[in-house]
Structure formats: structure tokens, C-alpha cells
Length: 349
Ligand code: UD1
Ligand code: UDP
Image (cartoon, rainbow, N blue to C red; front, side, top):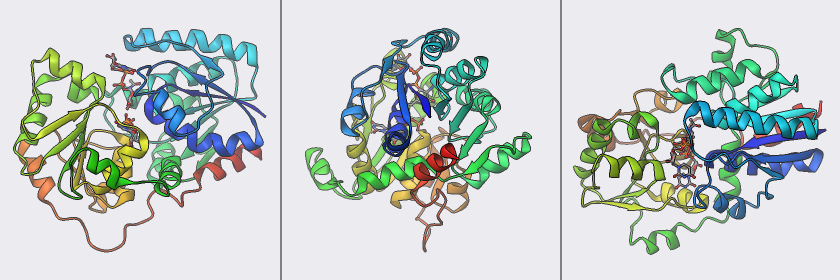
């Protein structure tokens, strides 16, 4: 089968690398990079680190408003699909690249597979929530990472083509764990295991609201431990625009590669983040997560005590950082690390 896979943002390169390895052994994959992320540290670094083949097409859209970015991807991708005439289009997650990929396929009546289907935060002001709802309703194959995702789809009347396969990010993480060398990374940053917290912030709700951003920085400044903060360019721009500087115990660094990020997560005392992917990775690595949001698409990590929703509130953040981790084994929330094989088996059938 000829499959066009659409990627555009950092977490999609990581997910695609895990699936592509298995997919390309059985199918002809045509990889399209929309260009939504273009900084080398948000894009190229993952292609080289994860042995992802260079994209067959690069749409070069860059940053723009939601309407413009989505429309440009839609227009340019349609041309690719008309030329390639694939049997299927595959999209990942919930970015503008996901939505545009889903619309382009649906409008041309090309069957659509959505990897990471069924996630819901319940917050429709979040751009990702609209993207994922619309992508799910365009898809005929919906690959869900969790039972919660399957249940969310059923609540919206989607039951056909739904497959619970686990999370491809777990596959990706397992592939990296073997070659992880946290000590080297920690030494380079003069950090000690469990002697720091790891921070990332990039969600619109936090970066585009200077009050929330200031509150998060203040909360970090009040922590007893040093914080290391690999910063997405979006948050740096937001800090500069709001004239906010990091408190003295917060070390802002460039975005890091995937292996380095897992190393930093694995040895952190706590992970403080508004990232979707990092909430799961913290859980999988057995590090308590403090989510800098008021809701999550991964409620099972909260229910089992490994993740705490703290919003942008200094007191809640401080209390969450102090909260001891649960005892006992972690439940297998994200499958068995073989999501890619399961997806490819369904695609083949
Ligand atoms: C996007 C996704 C988000 C995902 C995240 C992963 C949408 C709506 N958002 O958020 O769901 O969690 O990717 O990291 O699709 N920028 C650069 N260099 C780049 C890319 C972006 O400087 O290579 C800056 C630009 O100022 C841009 C801003 O970041 O305006 C936001 O980029 P955008 O792709 O719109 O959203 P992200 O915040 O990256
Ligand atoms: N990540 C990374 N380097 C960074 C920040 C994140 O490799 O500097 C990885 C992280 O480990 C996870 C993924 O990127 O696998 C999450 O991406 P992001 O937080 O940008 O997006 P989200 O998951 O929220 O959509």
C-alpha cells in the first residue's frame, strides 16, 4: 500500500520515527514534512537522531496564524496527494498539521488513519482540542493509545474503525532507553540525579497569557531545587515580549534532542510541564509529573497519583512538587511498547 504520512511538529517526528521503522518494511511510505516546525533544534535534530528518512516532500509553511498555517498546508498537501494518489493518509496527534492533513485526505476521499486518536481535554478553547476532534471525525481508522480515548470516541458516536493499540511514544521511549546515558548529560549541565526539576512550557494558554507565564516563573523561583528549562522558542519570545526573566535558580537552555530529554526526565526530582508527551514520559520513567495546566488528555496518569494538575498557581505547584510519589507498581497505561506493530497489522488487513 502507498501511504502518505504527514508530520510537522517535534512530537510528530518522534512518533513517526517509531512507526516508520515498522511501516516501511511492509508498505511504501511517502513522508511529508509540513514545515510547521523549522528551527533545526525543533526539527532536523530529530530526523538525524532517530534515523527518520529525509521527507519526500517539504511544504515549508513556517509559522503563521492558525487559519493561514492550516490553509497553506491544506493547499500544498492537496497537490502532493493528487500527484501521489496514495491508498491512505496517516496523521499524528493534534497539531495544525494534523488537522490540515485530515482535511486534505477527507476532501479527496482518501482513507485517513489517525494515530493518537480519541484524546480529549474537554477544553475547546485549546487549539489542539479542535484539531483532534475534527481529525477523529474525518478518520476511518482511529488508533487509540488508551481505553479512555476509546471511551471518548464512543461518547461521540465513533465506534467503527477504532483500535486500542497503546502509545507509539512508549515504543519510541523503549527504543531510546537502551542507548540512554543520563550521566554524561547531567555532568555537562552540572546537575545531580534527583537534584533538580525539569521544566518545559509551550502551550498557548501559558505562553500567550503574561500573567500565567509570570506566575509559573515565580513558582519556579520559589522552589528549593534548581530548575533546568529547555525552552521552546515560543516561550522565549513570550518572556521577551512580557519583559520576564527567569529567576536565579532557573537555567534556561536551548531545546534538547530526544535522548537528552529522556535522560533529563529520567533523573529529575520532578517534571514540571504543559507538554502532552512529557506527562506520559515522566510516568513511563517513574518520575512524578506536575502538569502546568488545569486539565489533561491523560487523566489516567492523574488517577494513579503520578501526575498532579497544578495550573499556573504558585501554591498548587509548590504542593505538587512536595507530594511524594505513589508506592507500588505503575499500571500499564500505555500498552506494551508494540503499538507500531499493532498499527501496521491493522493497516495490512
Ligand atoms: C505546536 C502545536 C502543539 C504541539 C507543539 C509541539 C498547534 C496549534 N500547536 O505548538 O499542539 O504541542 O507544536 O511542540 O499545532 N516557532 C519557532 N520556530 C519553529 C516553530 C515555531 O520559533 O520552528 C515559534 C514561532 O514564533 C511560532 C510559535 O513558535 O509562531 C508557535 O509555533 P506553532 O507551530 O504555531 O505552535 P507550537 O507552540 O510550536
Ligand atoms: N522533547 C525533546 N526536546 C525538548 C522538548 C521536548 O526532545 O527540548 C520531546 C519530549 O521528550 C517529547 C516530545 O518532545 O517526546 C514532546 O513534545 P512537545 O512537548 O513539544 O509537544 P506535545 O507533546 O505537548 O505535543
